Length: 459
Image (cartoon, rainbow, N blue to C red; front, side, top):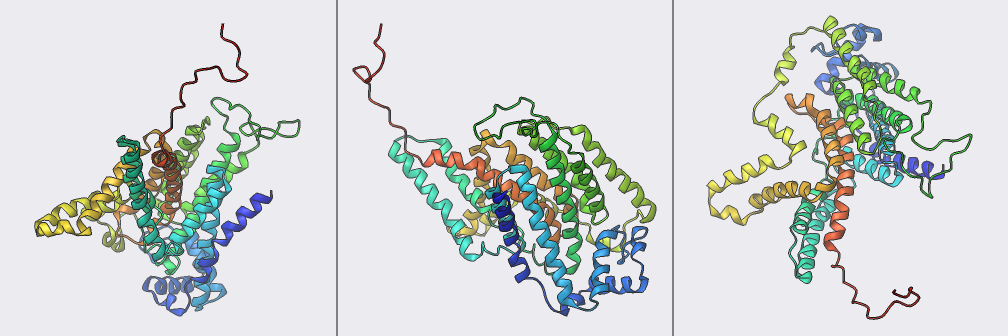
Protein backbone atom coordinates (compact mmCIF):
# COMPACT_ATOMS: atom_id res chain seq x y z
CA UNK A 1 0.00 0.00 0.00
CA UNK A 2 2.86 2.37 0.79
CA UNK A 3 4.51 1.78 -2.60
CA UNK A 4 1.17 2.37 -4.37
CA UNK A 5 0.73 5.69 -2.58
CA UNK A 6 4.25 6.77 -3.50
CA UNK A 7 3.71 5.78 -7.12
CA UNK A 8 0.45 7.72 -7.33
CA UNK A 9 2.11 10.72 -5.71
CA UNK A 10 4.95 10.67 -8.25
CA UNK A 11 2.46 10.36 -11.09
CA UNK A 12 0.51 13.35 -9.76
CA UNK A 13 3.77 15.23 -9.41
CA UNK A 14 4.19 14.97 -13.18
CA UNK A 15 1.06 17.14 -13.48
CA UNK A 16 2.67 20.11 -11.72
CA UNK A 17 4.43 21.42 -14.86
CA UNK A 18 1.12 21.18 -16.72
CA UNK A 19 -0.40 23.71 -14.32
CA UNK A 20 2.74 25.83 -14.29
CA UNK A 21 2.81 26.19 -18.09
CA UNK A 22 -0.95 26.39 -18.63
CA UNK A 23 -2.44 29.01 -20.90
CA UNK A 24 -3.62 32.29 -19.36
CA UNK A 25 -5.21 35.48 -20.58
CA UNK A 26 -8.40 36.39 -22.42
CA UNK A 27 -6.66 35.90 -25.75
CA UNK A 28 -7.71 32.26 -25.39
CA UNK A 29 -11.30 33.34 -26.02
CA UNK A 30 -10.54 35.27 -29.22
CA UNK A 31 -9.98 32.16 -31.33
CA UNK A 32 -12.61 32.07 -34.10
CA UNK A 33 -13.93 28.60 -33.21
CA UNK A 34 -14.09 29.45 -29.52
CA UNK A 35 -15.84 32.77 -30.13
CA UNK A 36 -18.59 31.22 -32.26
CA UNK A 37 -18.96 28.24 -29.93
CA UNK A 38 -19.41 30.32 -26.77
CA UNK A 39 -21.76 32.72 -28.54
CA UNK A 40 -23.97 29.86 -29.69
CA UNK A 41 -23.97 28.26 -26.23
CA UNK A 42 -25.09 31.55 -24.67
CA UNK A 43 -27.86 32.04 -27.23
CA UNK A 44 -29.31 28.53 -26.90
CA UNK A 45 -28.95 28.42 -23.09
CA UNK A 46 -29.95 24.75 -23.01
CA UNK A 47 -27.17 22.22 -22.28
CA UNK A 48 -29.41 19.23 -23.07
CA UNK A 49 -29.98 20.40 -26.65
CA UNK A 50 -26.57 19.13 -27.72
CA UNK A 51 -27.55 15.51 -26.99
CA UNK A 52 -30.10 15.65 -29.80
CA UNK A 53 -28.56 18.15 -32.23
CA UNK A 54 -25.37 19.12 -33.98
CA UNK A 55 -22.78 20.72 -31.72
CA UNK A 56 -22.60 24.56 -31.52
CA UNK A 57 -20.33 25.08 -34.56
CA UNK A 58 -22.91 23.19 -36.67
CA UNK A 59 -20.33 21.49 -38.86
CA UNK A 60 -21.90 18.02 -38.54
CA UNK A 61 -20.23 16.69 -35.38
CA UNK A 62 -21.91 14.97 -32.43
CA UNK A 63 -20.08 16.13 -29.29
CA UNK A 64 -22.53 16.73 -26.42
CA UNK A 65 -20.10 15.82 -23.62
CA UNK A 66 -17.26 18.06 -24.78
CA UNK A 67 -19.82 20.82 -25.35
CA UNK A 68 -20.94 20.45 -21.74
CA UNK A 69 -17.38 21.20 -20.64
CA UNK A 70 -17.63 24.54 -22.45
CA UNK A 71 -21.09 25.05 -20.95
CA UNK A 72 -19.70 24.61 -17.42
CA UNK A 73 -16.85 27.05 -18.01
CA UNK A 74 -19.16 29.58 -19.64
CA UNK A 75 -21.64 29.47 -16.76
CA UNK A 76 -19.13 29.48 -13.89
CA UNK A 77 -16.76 32.15 -15.17
CA UNK A 78 -17.90 33.76 -18.46
CA UNK A 79 -15.26 35.80 -20.23
CA UNK A 80 -12.47 34.65 -17.88
CA UNK A 81 -9.69 33.29 -20.09
CA UNK A 82 -7.56 32.28 -17.10
CA UNK A 83 -10.31 29.99 -15.83
CA UNK A 84 -10.80 28.42 -19.25
CA UNK A 85 -7.05 27.78 -19.44
CA UNK A 86 -7.10 26.22 -15.97
CA UNK A 87 -9.84 23.81 -17.11
CA UNK A 88 -7.68 22.75 -20.04
CA UNK A 89 -4.83 22.06 -17.62
CA UNK A 90 -7.09 20.06 -15.29
CA UNK A 91 -8.24 17.90 -18.19
CA UNK A 92 -4.66 17.22 -19.31
CA UNK A 93 -3.61 16.45 -15.73
CA UNK A 94 -6.45 13.95 -15.34
CA UNK A 95 -5.34 12.24 -18.56
CA UNK A 96 -1.79 12.02 -17.23
CA UNK A 97 -2.87 10.34 -13.99
CA UNK A 98 -5.22 7.98 -15.85
CA UNK A 99 -2.33 6.92 -18.07
CA UNK A 100 -0.50 5.91 -14.89
CA UNK A 101 -3.48 3.70 -14.00
CA UNK A 102 -3.45 2.08 -17.45
CA UNK A 103 0.30 1.42 -17.30
CA UNK A 104 -0.04 -0.09 -13.82
CA UNK A 105 -2.70 -2.48 -15.08
CA UNK A 106 -0.65 -3.51 -18.12
CA UNK A 107 2.90 -3.53 -16.74
CA UNK A 108 2.34 -4.23 -13.03
CA UNK A 109 5.39 -2.11 -12.19
CA UNK A 110 5.20 1.18 -10.31
CA UNK A 111 8.63 2.50 -11.49
CA UNK A 112 7.79 1.72 -15.13
CA UNK A 113 4.36 3.34 -14.83
CA UNK A 114 5.83 6.46 -13.21
CA UNK A 115 8.51 6.74 -15.91
CA UNK A 116 5.88 6.42 -18.63
CA UNK A 117 3.71 9.05 -16.96
CA UNK A 118 6.55 11.54 -16.80
CA UNK A 119 7.44 10.82 -20.42
CA UNK A 120 3.88 11.58 -21.50
CA UNK A 121 3.84 14.76 -19.39
CA UNK A 122 6.99 15.85 -21.17
CA UNK A 123 5.43 15.20 -24.58
CA UNK A 124 2.30 17.09 -23.52
CA UNK A 125 4.46 20.17 -22.92
CA UNK A 126 6.50 19.99 -26.11
CA UNK A 127 9.42 17.98 -24.70
CA UNK A 128 9.52 19.85 -21.41
CA UNK A 129 12.08 18.21 -19.12
CA UNK A 130 13.38 16.43 -22.21
CA UNK A 131 14.33 19.80 -23.66
CA UNK A 132 17.21 20.85 -25.87
CA UNK A 133 19.80 19.51 -23.42
CA UNK A 134 18.09 16.13 -23.32
CA UNK A 135 17.78 16.01 -27.11
CA UNK A 136 21.53 16.45 -27.24
CA UNK A 137 22.02 13.61 -24.77
CA UNK A 138 19.62 11.39 -26.72
CA UNK A 139 21.60 12.14 -29.87
CA UNK A 140 24.98 11.20 -28.36
CA UNK A 141 24.01 8.14 -26.29
CA UNK A 142 23.46 5.89 -29.35
CA UNK A 143 26.69 7.15 -30.93
CA UNK A 144 28.68 6.22 -27.81
CA UNK A 145 26.97 2.85 -27.51
CA UNK A 146 27.61 2.10 -31.19
CA UNK A 147 31.31 2.81 -30.76
CA UNK A 148 31.39 0.65 -27.61
CA UNK A 149 29.79 -2.24 -29.49
CA UNK A 150 32.28 -1.91 -32.34
CA UNK A 151 35.11 -1.83 -29.81
CA UNK A 152 33.72 -4.94 -28.10
CA UNK A 153 33.59 -6.84 -31.37
CA UNK A 154 37.18 -5.81 -32.10
CA UNK A 155 38.40 -6.94 -28.67
CA UNK A 156 36.57 -10.24 -29.06
CA UNK A 157 38.06 -10.62 -32.55
CA UNK A 158 34.68 -11.75 -33.76
CA UNK A 159 32.23 -9.85 -35.97
CA UNK A 160 28.55 -10.11 -34.97
CA UNK A 161 25.66 -9.14 -37.19
CA UNK A 162 23.41 -9.10 -34.14
CA UNK A 163 25.77 -6.73 -32.34
CA UNK A 164 25.86 -4.44 -35.37
CA UNK A 165 22.05 -4.45 -35.56
CA UNK A 166 21.83 -3.59 -31.86
CA UNK A 167 24.29 -0.74 -32.33
CA UNK A 168 22.40 0.74 -35.26
CA UNK A 169 19.04 0.18 -33.56
CA UNK A 170 20.08 2.47 -30.73
CA UNK A 171 19.63 5.54 -32.93
CA UNK A 172 15.95 4.67 -33.35
CA UNK A 173 15.28 3.38 -29.84
CA UNK A 174 16.71 6.36 -27.96
CA UNK A 175 15.12 8.87 -30.32
CA UNK A 176 11.69 7.55 -29.23
CA UNK A 177 12.12 9.43 -25.95
CA UNK A 178 11.59 12.69 -27.78
CA UNK A 179 8.06 13.60 -28.84
CA UNK A 180 7.42 13.26 -32.55
CA UNK A 181 4.60 15.81 -32.33
CA UNK A 182 5.98 19.14 -31.15
CA UNK A 183 2.58 20.87 -31.51
CA UNK A 184 0.94 18.50 -29.04
CA UNK A 185 0.80 21.15 -26.30
CA UNK A 186 -0.15 24.09 -28.53
CA UNK A 187 -3.26 22.28 -29.77
CA UNK A 188 -4.33 20.73 -26.45
CA UNK A 189 -3.18 22.64 -23.40
CA UNK A 190 -2.97 26.07 -25.07
CA UNK A 191 -5.96 25.88 -27.46
CA UNK A 192 -9.51 25.64 -26.10
CA UNK A 193 -11.10 23.64 -28.96
CA UNK A 194 -8.43 20.99 -28.40
CA UNK A 195 -10.23 19.98 -25.22
CA UNK A 196 -12.61 17.95 -27.40
CA UNK A 197 -9.81 15.39 -27.89
CA UNK A 198 -8.38 15.63 -24.37
CA UNK A 199 -11.81 15.20 -22.75
CA UNK A 200 -12.41 12.16 -24.94
CA UNK A 201 -9.03 10.82 -23.84
CA UNK A 202 -10.21 10.86 -20.21
CA UNK A 203 -13.08 8.49 -20.98
CA UNK A 204 -10.96 6.45 -23.38
CA UNK A 205 -8.26 5.84 -20.76
CA UNK A 206 -10.86 4.93 -18.14
CA UNK A 207 -12.38 2.47 -20.60
CA UNK A 208 -9.01 0.91 -21.46
CA UNK A 209 -7.76 0.76 -17.87
CA UNK A 210 -11.04 -0.69 -16.60
CA UNK A 211 -11.01 -3.34 -19.30
CA UNK A 212 -7.38 -4.15 -18.53
CA UNK A 213 -8.27 -4.57 -14.86
CA UNK A 214 -11.25 -6.74 -15.83
CA UNK A 215 -8.99 -9.11 -17.79
CA UNK A 216 -6.13 -9.01 -15.31
CA UNK A 217 -8.30 -9.96 -12.35
CA UNK A 218 -10.76 -12.26 -14.08
CA UNK A 219 -9.12 -13.93 -17.07
CA UNK A 220 -7.50 -17.25 -16.11
CA UNK A 221 -4.06 -18.28 -17.25
CA UNK A 222 -3.96 -20.70 -20.16
CA UNK A 223 -1.27 -22.57 -18.22
CA UNK A 224 -1.33 -21.67 -14.52
CA UNK A 225 2.09 -20.30 -13.52
CA UNK A 226 4.00 -21.96 -10.75
CA UNK A 227 3.88 -20.01 -7.46
CA UNK A 228 7.07 -18.15 -6.60
CA UNK A 229 8.47 -17.26 -3.17
CA UNK A 230 7.27 -13.68 -3.72
CA UNK A 231 3.61 -14.65 -4.30
CA UNK A 232 1.28 -14.15 -1.31
CA UNK A 233 -0.23 -17.39 -0.05
CA UNK A 234 -3.83 -18.25 -0.91
CA UNK A 235 -6.02 -18.64 2.19
CA UNK A 236 -9.72 -18.90 2.91
CA UNK A 237 -10.03 -15.11 2.69
CA UNK A 238 -7.66 -14.43 -0.22
CA UNK A 239 -7.04 -15.69 -3.72
CA UNK A 240 -4.05 -15.79 -5.99
CA UNK A 241 -3.97 -13.55 -9.04
CA UNK A 242 -5.77 -15.09 -11.99
CA UNK A 243 -8.56 -16.83 -10.07
CA UNK A 244 -12.17 -15.78 -10.81
CA UNK A 245 -13.28 -12.70 -8.89
CA UNK A 246 -16.22 -10.34 -8.94
CA UNK A 247 -14.85 -8.03 -11.62
CA UNK A 248 -17.94 -7.25 -13.66
CA UNK A 249 -18.09 -3.76 -12.23
CA UNK A 250 -14.89 -2.95 -14.08
CA UNK A 251 -16.32 -4.26 -17.33
CA UNK A 252 -19.47 -2.16 -16.91
CA UNK A 253 -17.34 0.91 -16.15
CA UNK A 254 -15.34 0.24 -19.31
CA UNK A 255 -18.49 0.06 -21.44
CA UNK A 256 -20.00 3.21 -19.91
CA UNK A 257 -16.76 5.13 -20.40
CA UNK A 258 -16.59 3.99 -24.01
CA UNK A 259 -20.14 5.29 -24.58
CA UNK A 260 -19.25 8.66 -23.01
CA UNK A 261 -16.11 8.88 -25.15
CA UNK A 262 -18.22 8.32 -28.29
CA UNK A 263 -20.38 11.28 -27.26
CA UNK A 264 -17.28 13.44 -26.79
CA UNK A 265 -15.17 13.11 -29.93
CA UNK A 266 -15.28 11.05 -33.13
CA UNK A 267 -11.85 9.51 -32.59
CA UNK A 268 -13.41 7.31 -29.90
CA UNK A 269 -14.75 4.93 -32.56
CA UNK A 270 -11.33 3.24 -32.41
CA UNK A 271 -11.64 2.29 -28.72
CA UNK A 272 -12.98 -1.21 -29.53
CA UNK A 273 -10.02 -1.79 -31.84
CA UNK A 274 -7.57 -0.69 -29.15
CA UNK A 275 -9.35 -2.93 -26.63
CA UNK A 276 -8.92 -5.81 -29.06
CA UNK A 277 -5.18 -5.06 -29.12
CA UNK A 278 -5.17 -5.10 -25.30
CA UNK A 279 -6.82 -8.50 -25.48
CA UNK A 280 -3.93 -9.69 -27.63
CA UNK A 281 -1.54 -8.15 -25.09
CA UNK A 282 -3.02 -10.24 -22.29
CA UNK A 283 -2.95 -13.26 -24.57
CA UNK A 284 0.79 -12.76 -24.99
CA UNK A 285 1.05 -12.64 -21.19
CA UNK A 286 -0.47 -16.10 -20.96
CA UNK A 287 -4.02 -15.02 -20.12
CA UNK A 288 -7.07 -16.64 -21.64
CA UNK A 289 -8.53 -13.39 -22.95
CA UNK A 290 -12.30 -13.35 -23.20
CA UNK A 291 -12.63 -11.80 -26.65
CA UNK A 292 -16.35 -12.61 -26.85
CA UNK A 293 -17.19 -9.87 -24.35
CA UNK A 294 -15.59 -7.29 -26.65
CA UNK A 295 -18.63 -7.59 -28.91
CA UNK A 296 -20.40 -5.16 -26.58
CA UNK A 297 -17.90 -2.41 -27.41
CA UNK A 298 -18.49 -2.91 -31.14
CA UNK A 299 -22.23 -2.82 -30.41
CA UNK A 300 -21.78 0.58 -28.78
CA UNK A 301 -20.07 1.89 -31.92
CA UNK A 302 -22.88 0.55 -34.12
CA UNK A 303 -25.51 2.11 -31.85
CA UNK A 304 -23.58 5.40 -31.90
CA UNK A 305 -23.45 5.40 -35.71
CA UNK A 306 -27.16 4.57 -36.03
CA UNK A 307 -28.17 7.33 -33.60
CA UNK A 308 -25.77 9.80 -35.15
CA UNK A 309 -27.22 9.52 -38.64
CA UNK A 310 -30.67 10.19 -37.16
CA UNK A 311 -29.74 13.63 -35.84
CA UNK A 312 -26.63 14.69 -37.83
CA UNK A 313 -26.73 15.18 -41.62
CA UNK A 314 -24.89 12.43 -43.48
CA UNK A 315 -23.48 14.66 -46.19
CA UNK A 316 -20.18 16.42 -45.28
CA UNK A 317 -20.38 20.00 -44.10
CA UNK A 318 -18.37 22.78 -45.70
CA UNK A 319 -15.85 22.55 -42.86
CA UNK A 320 -15.47 18.80 -43.32
CA UNK A 321 -14.95 19.17 -47.07
CA UNK A 322 -12.27 21.74 -46.32
CA UNK A 323 -10.51 19.44 -43.84
CA UNK A 324 -10.53 16.20 -45.83
CA UNK A 325 -7.27 15.52 -47.63
CA UNK A 326 -5.44 13.01 -49.78
CA UNK A 327 -2.03 12.82 -51.40
CA UNK A 328 1.50 12.45 -50.03
CA UNK A 329 0.80 14.16 -46.71
CA UNK A 330 -1.64 11.45 -45.74
CA UNK A 331 0.89 8.67 -46.35
CA UNK A 332 3.73 10.58 -44.70
CA UNK A 333 1.74 11.03 -41.48
CA UNK A 334 0.74 7.37 -41.56
CA UNK A 335 4.34 6.27 -41.96
CA UNK A 336 5.40 8.38 -38.98
CA UNK A 337 3.60 5.85 -36.80
CA UNK A 338 4.46 2.55 -38.46
CA UNK A 339 7.80 3.23 -40.13
CA UNK A 340 9.29 6.64 -39.32
CA UNK A 341 11.79 7.84 -41.88
CA UNK A 342 10.59 5.96 -44.96
CA UNK A 343 9.60 9.16 -46.76
CA UNK A 344 12.60 11.03 -45.39
CA UNK A 345 14.95 8.56 -47.05
CA UNK A 346 13.17 9.11 -50.36
CA UNK A 347 13.74 12.85 -49.97
CA UNK A 348 17.42 12.17 -49.24
CA UNK A 349 17.74 10.15 -52.42
CA UNK A 350 16.07 12.89 -54.46
CA UNK A 351 18.47 15.42 -52.92
CA UNK A 352 21.34 13.74 -54.80
CA UNK A 353 20.18 15.67 -57.84
CA UNK A 354 21.59 18.83 -56.25
CA UNK A 355 25.14 17.50 -56.60
CA UNK A 356 27.68 15.23 -54.88
CA UNK A 357 28.42 17.79 -52.15
CA UNK A 358 25.15 16.77 -50.50
CA UNK A 359 26.99 13.61 -49.42
CA UNK A 360 29.02 15.71 -46.99
CA UNK A 361 25.98 17.00 -45.12
CA UNK A 362 23.86 15.57 -42.32
CA UNK A 363 20.71 16.37 -44.28
CA UNK A 364 21.56 13.39 -46.50
CA UNK A 365 22.94 10.91 -43.99
CA UNK A 366 20.56 11.72 -41.14
CA UNK A 367 17.42 10.33 -42.82
CA UNK A 368 19.31 7.28 -44.07
CA UNK A 369 20.67 6.46 -40.61
CA UNK A 370 17.21 7.01 -39.12
CA UNK A 371 15.54 4.64 -41.58
CA UNK A 372 18.22 1.96 -41.30
CA UNK A 373 18.06 2.25 -37.51
CA UNK A 374 14.29 1.75 -37.60
CA UNK A 375 14.62 -1.48 -39.61
CA UNK A 376 17.52 -2.84 -37.57
CA UNK A 377 15.64 -2.12 -34.32
CA UNK A 378 13.04 -4.72 -35.27
CA UNK A 379 15.80 -7.12 -36.34
CA UNK A 380 17.59 -6.61 -33.02
CA UNK A 381 14.49 -7.42 -30.95
CA UNK A 382 13.15 -10.12 -33.28
CA UNK A 383 12.86 -12.56 -30.36
CA UNK A 384 10.76 -10.10 -28.35
CA UNK A 385 9.03 -8.05 -31.03
CA UNK A 386 5.40 -9.03 -30.42
CA UNK A 387 4.58 -6.76 -27.47
CA UNK A 388 6.19 -3.65 -29.01
CA UNK A 389 4.33 -4.40 -32.24
CA UNK A 390 0.98 -4.71 -30.44
CA UNK A 391 1.57 -1.40 -28.62
CA UNK A 392 2.60 0.32 -31.85
CA UNK A 393 -0.47 -0.94 -33.70
CA UNK A 394 -2.71 0.19 -30.83
CA UNK A 395 -1.30 3.71 -31.14
CA UNK A 396 -1.64 3.63 -34.92
CA UNK A 397 -5.26 2.48 -34.84
CA UNK A 398 -6.09 5.17 -32.27
CA UNK A 399 -4.83 7.76 -34.74
CA UNK A 400 -6.17 6.17 -37.95
CA UNK A 401 -9.50 8.08 -38.33
CA UNK A 402 -7.71 11.43 -38.14
CA UNK A 403 -5.11 10.69 -40.82
CA UNK A 404 -7.62 11.67 -43.51
CA UNK A 405 -7.91 15.22 -42.14
CA UNK A 406 -5.57 18.19 -42.22
CA UNK A 407 -3.41 17.81 -39.18
CA UNK A 408 -3.84 19.33 -35.73
CA UNK A 409 -1.85 18.40 -32.64
CA UNK A 410 -4.83 17.20 -30.60
CA UNK A 411 -5.39 14.37 -33.10
CA UNK A 412 -2.26 12.75 -31.65
CA UNK A 413 -3.08 13.16 -27.95
CA UNK A 414 -4.91 9.87 -27.41
CA UNK A 415 -2.47 7.93 -29.65
CA UNK A 416 0.43 9.42 -27.65
CA UNK A 417 -0.76 7.66 -24.49
CA UNK A 418 -0.41 4.33 -26.30
CA UNK A 419 2.86 5.38 -27.92
CA UNK A 420 4.25 5.62 -24.37
CA UNK A 421 3.45 1.92 -23.97
CA UNK A 422 5.32 1.24 -27.21
CA UNK A 423 8.39 3.11 -25.99
CA UNK A 424 8.36 1.15 -22.72
CA UNK A 425 8.05 -2.24 -24.38
CA UNK A 426 10.61 -1.29 -27.02
CA UNK A 427 13.20 -0.50 -24.35
CA UNK A 428 12.35 -3.68 -22.45
CA UNK A 429 12.94 -5.75 -25.59
CA UNK A 430 16.06 -3.82 -26.59
CA UNK A 431 17.82 -3.67 -23.22
CA UNK A 432 18.81 -7.37 -22.92
CA UNK A 433 20.21 -7.30 -26.45
CA UNK A 434 22.19 -4.16 -25.62
CA UNK A 435 23.65 -5.71 -22.46
CA UNK A 436 24.71 -8.77 -24.44
CA UNK A 437 26.29 -6.65 -27.16
CA UNK A 438 28.43 -4.52 -24.81
CA UNK A 439 29.38 -7.33 -22.43
CA UNK A 440 32.79 -9.05 -22.79
CA UNK A 441 32.83 -12.54 -24.25
CA UNK A 442 32.56 -15.30 -21.67
CA UNK A 443 35.90 -16.91 -20.82
CA UNK A 444 35.98 -20.66 -20.97
CA UNK A 445 37.17 -22.20 -17.71
CA UNK A 446 40.42 -24.21 -18.08
CA UNK A 447 40.08 -28.00 -17.93
CA UNK A 448 40.56 -29.46 -14.46
CA UNK A 449 43.10 -32.29 -14.27
CA UNK A 450 41.98 -33.49 -10.86
CA UNK A 451 38.61 -33.91 -9.30
CA UNK A 452 37.15 -30.87 -7.54
CA UNK A 453 37.51 -30.99 -3.76
CA UNK A 454 34.60 -32.83 -2.16
CA UNK A 455 33.39 -34.45 -5.39
CA UNK A 456 32.37 -38.09 -5.48
CA UNK A 457 34.97 -40.60 -6.67
CA UNK A 458 34.69 -41.72 -10.26
CA UNK A 459 33.76 -45.35 -10.70
